[in-house]
Length: 142
Length: 355
Image 1 (cartoon, one colour):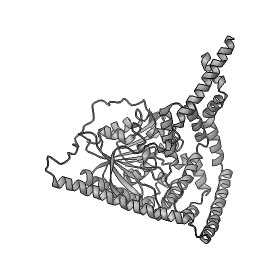
Image 2 (cartoon, rainbow over the protein chains, first blue to last red; image 1 turned 135 degrees about the vertical axis):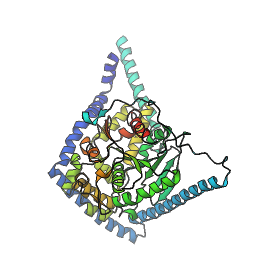
Image 3 (tube, rainbow over the protein chains, first blue to last red; image 1 turned 135 degrees about the horizontal axis):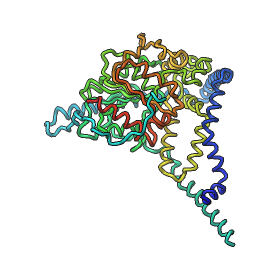
Image 4 (cartoon, one colour; image 1 turned 180 degrees about the vertical axis):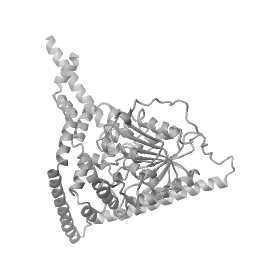
């Protein structure tokens, strides 16, 4: 106990950390309440519209500068990313089809004894659950 | 003299403790390189950015009805397969279930027109056909996490001859009146979703992350302080890094679905009011007659109980169960205690309905 108290005072930041953790929920709820307020909400809206407008203007402006310097813009890089994503997806689709074909071939070409055995779909639940679930709060108790 | 020795001793211990925290913690600087999604699986179908995985069974005898996990559009799938021992799918496979998972992947600009209609009426049925082809069973149990639970519910409600033997929704939002911050933003047109989608195509993951952070603005800071306090605890740090990496690895929302999320779900609360239309057809959750399980988290701040608790009431099934478990939105499915709470609840409920 006294050692705990000593450690406590040896670490002044610990008190601060513990306080933040304990009061986080209350502060967060208060801040969220402010953000949900109609006035704040509208203010966020205006700010967001401004941001969208600025983003649009900046993208166009920087895009023109980059084009003048013969450099790719973010839109160009994203375009390449999109095309790469498309190629990856097509490859993934082919891989999935090849895997399915392999499975079908293995099932038709091999002798029944050599074919990989699928698990039987006959499982029944155990009489008692292996792990006892935590006590639950039923909807009716809420 | 003795008090001098005591003071030296205390200082030495304090310094050793600080050093041990920081030196032990150094090896976790590359924590983002931790493995995830390592439960053995095969990609059995791929279409665009979407992939359908089949997890390799580990039991000689499995339940007849396969399980298909429908993931949310805004999160990476690996929250259900975070690490060996911290994996919902690994648990289900070990319990004798034949597990499939629909991973929506990372959408590109060319996918920005996708709407919930496409996912519910096209992608999910397509995947279920592939599952039937692969395992030879027509029926499936659908498990949807967060928005995935809503997508699975929409599919089940809209497909009259559907193959859904059981439906499980985990922390799925239904009533946006219970999400005051997002509702307020949607009501006040804080985010002009049409303008954003027109300009950006898909909603960037970083923007979604910021919106989620707004629900608990100080949580990240408090989490990092907690990490400092536990810097010498390898297990804590690994789990922390895994969560943090997953939380910041947000998937962009496709533009079309984002418009529906903001306008139909958040602003107009159409699903709750029974006014939602998917593919031109009104969604009536009362048409869901399959056994239904909904699990919510008591401390969920992303989908609070007020936003999720009415889902079971709207479902038509006679066999329906609603359970509230300790935990938050993410710890419910992937936290250290999930193995004692959510995982056995789902496995036990499904087991007797999967014969």
